[in-house]
Image 1: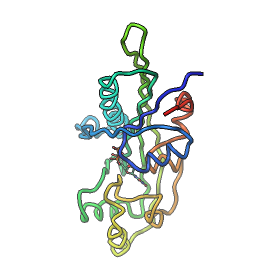
Image 2: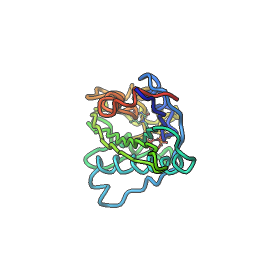
Image 3: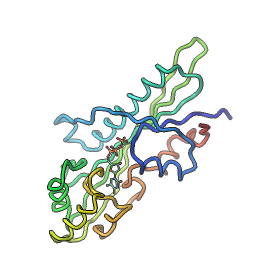
Image 4: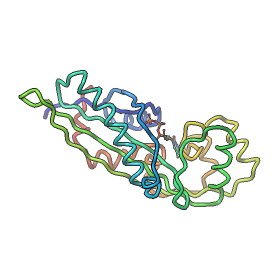
Length: 208
Ligand SMILES: Cc1cn([C@H]2C[C@H](O)[C@@H](COP(=O)(O)OP(=O)(O)OP(=O)(O)O)O2)c(=O)[nH]c1=O
């Protein structure tokens, strides 16, 4: 079976770790994609997560093709959003925004949606590139404990909240905020690896 090169279009250390732990060999090429959402996308968080994941992958696909493609390459983009009552929570801008998100999540159940987009690039005999694309999203649910203002401020002071959707990390100190969760834990952390490898088994033939 022919080997493929896998490129993770992400600067997230969590995604890097999850993909590595799944035994996939890959290189990282971060994408500085547009993560803005219009009202249409805001109204459909799962589609929003898939759209942003596609933008991230597409940006790196352009670079990979421009650098000249020599063998089959898979480019993976992903985007994670926290959604409460249909409202999307991204990464907080500052201390008070992080506290505000956690106050809203306190005592409630929210969804964590990760969109994933995998683009398979294949050089053709006539010097062109054939492109196949698979995009999906996965939903997990997280229920927070009732949090006091002190709990919230103490947590945000750890510094962990800032680069995380919804202002917490279930894989870190943030686990103490969580009463329970359902679905794929790795989806909450940023990459639904099980579904990814089920839908795109060719990734298991990685050779970077
Ligand atoms: C809810 C939750 C999110 N997160 C993280 C996963 C993502 O890295 C981040 C959401 O931001 P994203 O925009 O999805 O990703 P990113 O900016 O970190 O990386 P890139 O765009 O380069 O791929 O929140 C956790 O680490 N733990 C959690 O429990």
